[in-house]
Amino acid sequence: MSTLLQINASLAGANGQSSRLAQRFVADWQAKHPEGRVVTRDLASDPVPHLTADRFQAFLSQPDARTDEQRAHAEYSDALIEEIKNADTIVFAVPMYNFSVPSTLRAYFDHIARAGVTFRYTANGPEGLLKGKKAYVFITRGGFYADATDTQTPYLKQFLGFIGITDVNFVFAEGLGMGEESREKSLAQAHNAIGELLPRAA
Ligand SMILES: Cc1cc2nc3c(=O)[nH]c(=O)nc-3n(C[C@H](O)[C@H](O)[C@H](O)COP(=O)(O)O)c2cc1C
Image 1 (cartoon, rainbow, N blue to C red):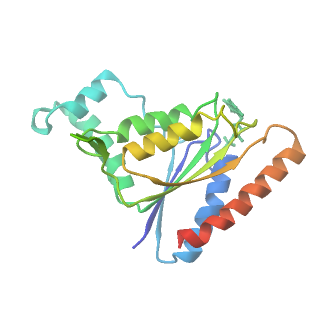
Image 2: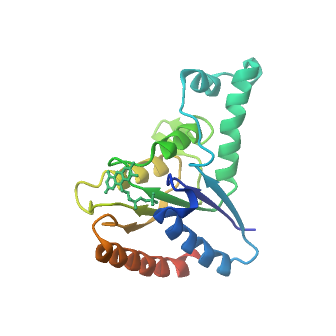
């Protein structure tokens, strides 16, 4: 059975522009995968905590040497990793906040990047261990950055590639804060782009 994991990072939750674009894709995916399972993680209503030294130490410690608190920290991260491991399609709804991805998404990434679990170092360099997945990233922005000032997209590609997710499609809706005409044009273009993705999502 196909499983799609949708991760919303907008502080507006499901009402965010990015979440709504992602939702359009997910609805179409569901139409193509009536037996498919959709799991939704909303980082605004259910935020992943910042990575602290205690939490990171818990990840590094041997399972049988963990304190109760370390075990709880490790199990929390394990559950997030299990969730993404079990998905073959992953959808990220990502607004631009202060020229970057939302800090909630960074905190989530900090909890799923685990040496020996989602990546490992080999003689040939790092190897991502979450292989064979497709990712779709729906990015919304108030302004325009589709040039060298876009640091968000290379970062997301690099991070996802590092954990083994190399088949990544991006859909952008830019200029959403530049007046109604700009917003409507951009959202219409994004919807068209989503329509292009669907045959490949089947
Ligand atoms: C806290 C905050 C920071 C933002 N920073 C930027 C920014 O750096 N660049 C930009 O183009 N838009 C910025 N915006 C505008 C959002 O990217 C834009 O409104 C986007 O549509 C939000 O997507 P969402 O509705 O999914 O949250 C910011 C919005 C918020 C709330």
